[in-house]
Image 1 (tube, rainbow, N blue to C red):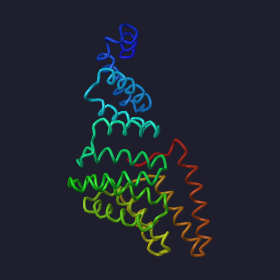
Image 2 (cartoon, rainbow, N blue to C red; image 1 turned 90 degrees about the horizontal axis):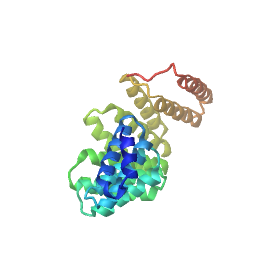
Image 3 (cartoon, rainbow, N blue to C red; image 1 turned 135 degrees about the vertical axis):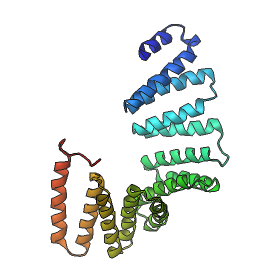
Image 4 (cartoon, helix red, strand yellow; image 1 turned 90 degrees about the vertical axis):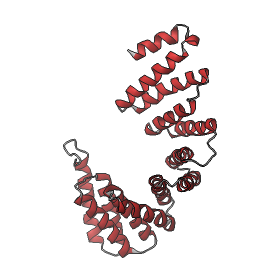
Length: 265
């Protein structure tokens, strides 16, 4: 019904119907969002943004932020980046407050997805600095986790350890187990890159054990752990054990692709 209404307004005195076109497209976008159709939600919101430009709406920057999030969810990272950067330019959020921190965080995450890692680091560190001044620990740790993943891509063990350890300390205090096992896994990678095999193996085992103890079956994570363990065994000359792990992984990957396998609730 909304799309029929949109078509009517766009084809009948559209220049006089920009308020209606704006509202209808926001509504259509929200409906697509509820249906998890992120690309369609972004496309509708893009039309809302066009109407907001005509109306010189004071909420244009917020609409652009929402558009950036939708494009990010749809894996359209260049479009997401452009939306977030324009939103920041419009609002002039050069002042150090939480809103500016969120903008820098969103931009940093998009740079990370585009594998533009130096720019991601710069944006994420700016966000972290702002959140620290604003005393926003949850957001600080979010930046730490994002920076950890960037430095994993860059194979930089020192920086991985620096940010992952701080994030792990925080999530251990609040007992966020899902973050705990991922961060232990990341710390294991840091130790592996440093040649500290015993510490790496212990962290990989801890990460896997914690995930399983909490009743989760996140297959992507569990397979990553198994592969890391196999690689460590090869380094230690335990080739037969490594080959057995690789054989098991291959079997599990074939099973996991089956529709009959479901993650634990």
